[in-house]
Length: 298
Ligand SMILES: Nc1ncnc2c1ncn2[C@@H]1O[C@H](COP(=O)(O)OP(=O)(O)OP(=O)(O)O)[C@@H](O)[C@H]1O
Image (cartoon, rainbow, N blue to C red; front, side, top):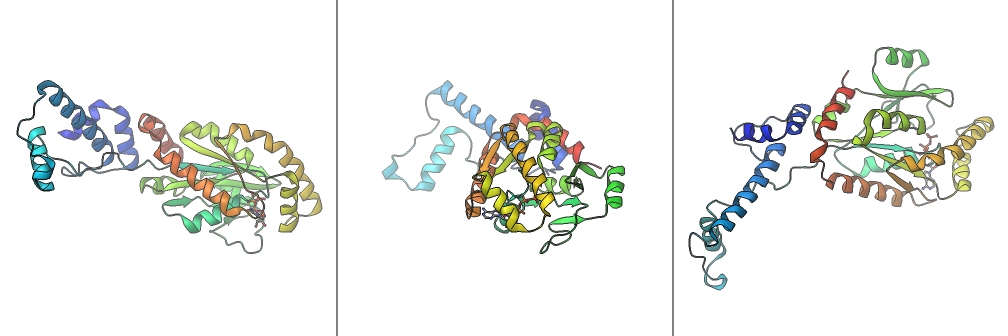
């Protein structure tokens, strides 16, 4: 009965509930959509009552003359209802975080550190047709596939987005995203600038877009040289491209500087962004969340 009333108030709450498959057996009114409305109703009811009557229904003892339980009981009696332990705010919505930036800026390095230090994050493993670099693990850093295998994934509509980056394909498999969001995990996507542009078109403001930059150009170039993964020609292309790519920073929600030797600072900043975004009121955005579900479905 209670859930019915709540959902008739908000179509978006319905979307959310079906998207994340939240089952709320009768007694568990502490689940998200209903508890939020429940809390609001409770507060407004209490205020109305207080405003209407202006006088308590029972005498409240002086604070120094009664124990805490006695005071609580007296206050409850006076207000006409007991104090609830239901959460006032529902747990935050799962967040989609897109991390992008020029080649060599440290996207993988930041994500590796985030992975070590933060729970409830699901890192979507990108599929790529590029060769494995030393130290990389198939299925953990990337899914390393042949060009033919990659194109077959495209054909089967298994990728959320894909692009040809420096002669190799890179794409985001949809597999697992919806499943992990349903479990309440935040989702981290790692994409190049082209990929971020495509994702912005697909996800709009439903995701948080973070642009990583080095402190200066020389730093970025040195990092690429030190990584020793590119030929001289490939290095030139990446650096020339990076010069253009930094112009796109303004289209992102946040810019994080990954300064030389300051990887931990950059990771902390990314974590703060995630925390702040999760604390934002998302109640009005549920239709977008519902729309997201379709995008991650096969
Ligand atoms: N803050 C930092 N200080 C010094 N070196 C760093 C820092 N962040 C990353 N690096 C190093 O810079 C190199 C490039 O980093 P990484 O491979 O993570 O970049 P990327 O953005 O993922 O590049 P690509 O898009 O080409 O895959 C790596 O050798 C990494 O260890």
